[in-house]
Length: 469
Picture 1 (spheres, rainbow, N blue to C red):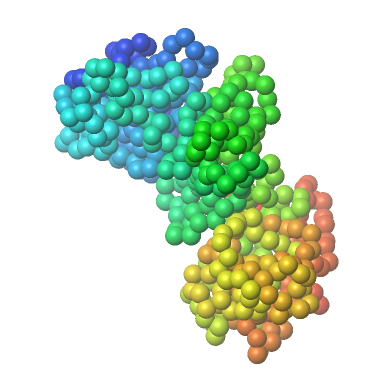
Picture 2 (picture 1 turned 45 degrees about the vertical axis):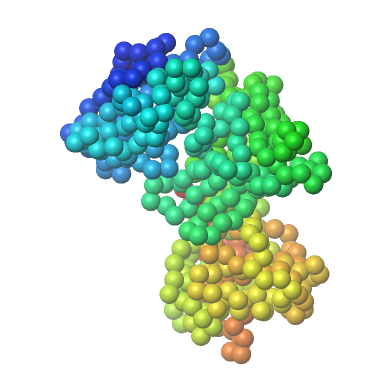
């Protein structure tokens, strides 16, 4: 069976050079039945006298989750660089209407004139909607003073010439129904990428300027060849340069991977290509593997195999291995040697031993993994103090060279292994091997490289590999 994807464009009056003025209204009809992949657009205006491709503004109707969304968009070529529906989708039936009212407010409405989005500029003297050469969509009054602008409501894209301050951020979402999201944020002493999971927040990439001199970062700006960082005296204190000579058009936070990239337009290939990426290897991505997966040296995903007494295989990259298990009577911590998490947060506790850190996770019903970091090798001395980090998700885990200062532990149901010390809730010597770390490695080439998990002193158990989508 073939899936049909429909893309329909309407070119309405005002497209090309005209602005949208008071009293303007345009409507798109929505299909009466759901058609997967459907997208319809009515282009309102475009920029002129600039490099190819140029910017265009449009209202769009798109099929999404068995419904249709209605949005106002700005596109650079075929790339959506701003959308009114980025943070909150407007679902509607029958029609999608854009209008600039007599009171100067820009509205998106649907059936029964229900308002799904508005600029909120009623009574501010707005006269027209205009698209600047920078891609900034603006509402201006009779004196051309800006009353509203899309640059103040960033999505996951930052355009050339656009500034981003500590009051704003870029956000990206893996899917509409996912609790996971990414953000690019400006802190007073650094810029960073974050993964949000529910109420928890973890950084996975950071850049700290070397010339802070006690001053705070105030804003960043994308120029033709770099992301420039400025302090509160408007002095440039840092920059991240593009790896290409071609001028940059935009910066984007990728929805699926969470990577940050600079993009230029390749005239030879007729498309945008990345000239810089913050994370250059798969294993540095926060969600490179599924839950309880480990990204190995070969940038493949290997699952943590947990063996439960008498019941055979308990878990193979499952998200719910610790669901419903809380407290020291129901769960225990298993240390995975030679791995760490790329996710970082503020320490939950400092100056605590590895065993105390493990117990802190056991007693916390939302904790599924913990990382203990000490200044000295604590592999054979579990009483050495260090920093304790707790995680609400077992993601971002990658294989590293053995480091006795780092101890990454996952929470599992009590009795997961047969050699567990009945007087301890933390397994110091783990009877499992993850991927190719701390044990015997069996590498087979069968049309590709596969990783198998071998349990010490026990019957081997084959592993499965796979990347998260």
